[in-house]
Length: 240
Ligand SMILES: O=P(O)(O)OC[C@H]1O[C@@H](O)[C@H](O)[C@@H](O)[C@@H]1O
Ligand SMILES: [Mg+2]
Image (cartoon, rainbow, N blue to C red; front, side, top):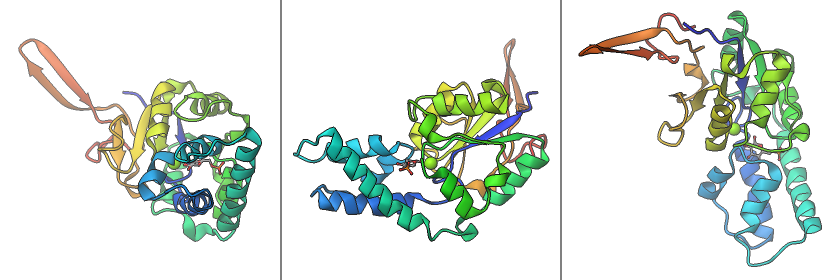
């Protein structure tokens, strides 16, 4: 039975709901550019880095933008976003977040953070949980955003744990793809229909368990035995 040695969390949408602030900031920018923007559009931006998100929004405009104009718009959005997150406090931790970090620590796991947000350090600080992580990836050092595996691989490397002994926790489709491409076990947080590529999906961190691969079900059909690993199932007594 495999026991994982490290857990690597995403931040936005897993530990805190900054998606709302990203939405408000992109909404204002889209309005200034005459681009229709709504919650459904915002869903596609989850887990996508700042410039990637901007490209998706501007693709809906008939105008063409120079690189300098794009940079100015991204900066404008970020300034607004920074104003919004400046009001955050530890009360903005999502339900179950503190308990999940406690459980990982109690189980002796290394704890990493892999967020493509260049504001991740500020958000962790506002939430008062920076000290709970053994390693936080600096998004500014990442060449390729999610769904590329680079950010999760970097977190694993810096934690000193091989990817196969890590599991990642993500709310975005791009994030789950990044975890799987890194060769890790993926815990999705959200809707199982949306996060179908995850190994296990929980509605939020109140249902967080450290997965193991204990065999919870063994069926023998003719001479073939099929074993089902628990993958963090709520019924597994070997998971913590
Ligand atoms: O603009 P920032 O703070 O660098 O964030 C980049 C991205 O960070 C991700 O965590 C969010 O899900 C995206 O919505 C966001 O665009
Ligand atoms: Mg996220």
